[in-house]
Length: 428
Ligand code: CMC
Image (tube, rainbow, N blue to C red; front, top):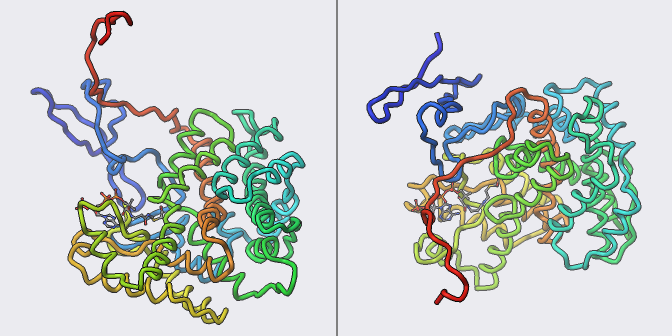
């Protein structure tokens, strides 16, 4: 028997089906609410609104659980590689050896950029923000693949979109970085593996040598960022794609959504905050007070999460990786001590405890990126590199699901009611 929720409105009772997910999460299906009652729901920031049914990522914020296709993030980050995780997100199952090889080959064969895109990258100012560059160039890719603009893509075309964007994002980010350094671009060498190839494309030259441990650490970071269910950028990808806009436009929208400080842009903001604390003499307590002060707009960047209310499992893994990488590279970064001090202080403080504010994925990731030699304004582009498979899996699921409708929320209008037009000559 279908379970129902009853809503009483103006003396009448209306019934709505209750939907249950595979992990026991429950939702009231209000798709027919307006049609039957004339009411809509109002949900600031969509905090209580399910926008889709999805079989990709499960997240339980109370218990700090994150799983891709059922596999715990702890196991994936320890025992798999980013390319396996990309395949898992896109196709629903872990690949066997042959499937993985074929997938890697497919991505490798698509690892080039059209000449026009390289020219475009050559003309951005060197101090342009990499996120603006990445979103513009991703959108511009649509001009070079008219066959992928068709709203009714075949399964084969969808596969190609996913492999191609995975391959090309790596080139876009590293190409632009080398340009900012006055260096010629370096072609992809997929034999190295995704993360090592990316690092090589960024830093090869001089005395640079690939370090497998460092590549592995970056691979783990990419896995941790690969998907996070219906966050701001994934939802943007789905919203843009729901109008049947092409995959490049959809992902470009996701990149722009990620850029903001409250989302992926937090990793850059964390490092800037830690540097500010260091330059100001290292007094992190002052910043805890600022974050608590309701008259101050300052927030402790890298702290808090819309969904995680105990801890962010990604942050736990990254904190461990941070120590390992800094030790491996022989880097003694005072920012790490400041970050640890801030975390300890905040976790003791009633303001943060009562609001369930814990370090999130962005709190320690910037310290690792900095140790790898990645400039601060590129941190969020590194998040893009990791998140591409997640966005593409969300886009594919949205495109292939019968449940998808064009995203079109309603509103409660609070402006003027109808009034009479006043001619220009009669206005004060
Ligand atoms: N520093 C100080 N106070 C905070 C913080 C913070 N970082 N985050 C939330 N609060 C307070 C907030 O002021 C509010 O207090 P009160 O109840 O007294 O008004 C309460 O906690 C709830 O905050 P909210 O803004 O209603 O929560 P939200 O779910 O809308 O926002 C958030 C979530 C991540 C935007 C927010 O915690 C934040 O701004 N954090 C800093 C930015 C950041 O690190 N973002 C990265 C998120 S993880 C990466 C990703 O996946 O995007």
